[in-house]
Image 1 (cartoon, protein in one colour):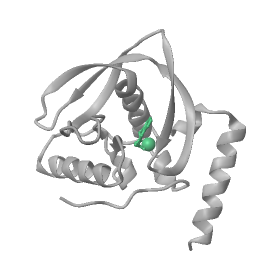
Image 2 (tube, rainbow, N blue to C red):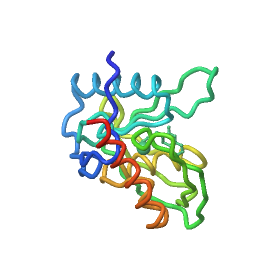
Image 3 (cartoon, rainbow, N blue to C red):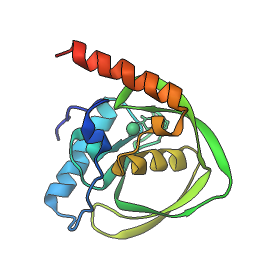
Image 4 (spheres, helix red, strand yellow):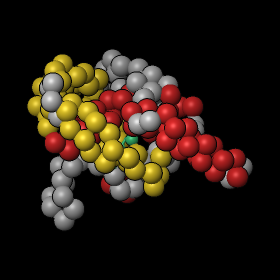
Length: 170
Ligand code: GNR
Ligand code: NI
């Protein structure tokens, strides 16, 4: 198991569209393990492969409460096959945009089709935090960030701040 460095805004990798995983093999299972370890270490409740620099369509999530038993979930080639007409608002953050939080409105419940670590197909019915987190992670697979769902003024302020910070660290 390996903790991998996180890709941070404004790294252009975060805008890349990730490619489908054709075969769930040992390399993919190793990547899933590394992503889970990286997510737990951060700590975060979700992580997309592109956040560790790998442009493949895989994400991991664990929304269990701290102190409770871990519930690691792995979604490979996830597709949203149903979205509710009802929306809900959550305060979101992103490990690739550290220490910035904003409210985002998304469908309150969704159904996701995906493969697990054994390559078996699953349908997942999600609502609440799991629905929000899945949509946040699936956005990453498409090069979309949660700041794309807030006002342009706020988004441009965040990007400017992180661009400056990245230049001062050169
Ligand atoms: O750790 C995370 N918390 C979070 C909170 C509200 C909505 C989405 C998230 S995902 C985030 C980890 C992350 O950046 N995943 O891409
Ligand atoms: Ni994120």
